[in-house]
Amino acid sequence: MIEFRSVSKRYPDGTAAVDDFNLVLPAHKTTVFVGSSGCGKTTLLRMINRMVEPTAGTIEIDGEAISQRDAVALRRSIGYIMQNGGLLPHQTVAENIATVPILNGTARRDARGRALELLDVVGLDRRVADRYPHQLSGGQQQRVGVARGLAADPNILLMDEPFGAVDPIVRAELQREVSRLQRELAKTVVFVTHDIDEAFLLGDQVVILERGAKIAQVGTPSEILETPASEFVARFVGVDRGRRALHLKQTAGGTVVVDAEGRTQGALVDPDAPAEWDER
Ligand SMILES: Nc1ncnc2c1ncn2[C@@H]1O[C@H](COP(=O)(O)OP(=O)(O)OP(=O)(O)O)[C@@H](O)[C@H]1O
Image (cartoon, rainbow, N blue to C red; front, side):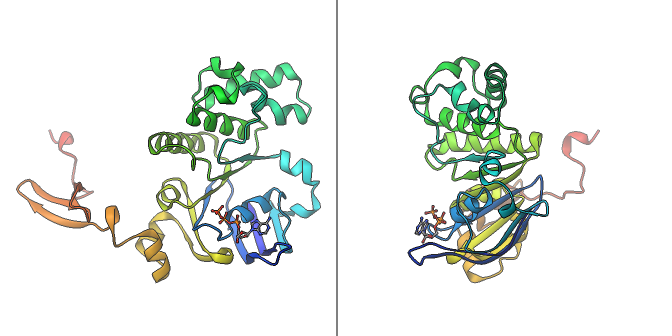
């Protein structure tokens, strides 16, 4: 569990990026910080591994203040995945993945073996191990970034707009993959995005932020969609437009659900009625 207690961050130029932020991020769940550009998402994320130090307040991991931990050791114990994968261009894929385990004292040969296993985990062919990042597609580089984040087997994984730079189809594929990994590995994931659909897809807990990292609402995707806390949240999640503005339409075959663009999204069914194929 990660806990922010009255955390603020004011940068030296006076920018109040985070102002008195309080939140519990449950273990083994995915918390998504979502909000528009400059609202303080990245600052929040980077305070968890002490890449950024708060100017006030404390952050605890499992009840221990991170300010008491050695900053370098803390950073190496937490996986960090960023937008462009953050890969070192002059190192091979396997070397990139093995960097942190080697820094932590793992023997080179063992670290390479683990790197190859991680390629399987993230759905990449082991043959890419000896390629350089520029020889991979954007989506493949992002998968290597995820493997790199997982390499030291961290309990906590920080993901900063990891799929921002890839096209929508690859993005959807990577989102599915991260959902699968999360089901299998049950890490405590903190994910930053400005895309509300991505937040609802991946988040167990979604935190909608306004400027200064002010919490507009925190809840499950269903809670937020069903009961937006304010006009701001309702507008941000778009409950009243596009795919989310659903209405019913009677057809010869029954009642269907249609979105604001007139596209049929599904049929209205009685969840308690036996499915047709069960009827004998
Ligand atoms: N090193 C810095 N020095 C001064 N101001 C900074 C620094 N880093 C961030 N800021 C400012 O702090 C505020 C929050 O920035 P942050 O990067 O946390 O927001 P964000 O929500 O992640 O934005 P984006 O989605 O654009 O990355 C912004 O006003 C930003 O300009």
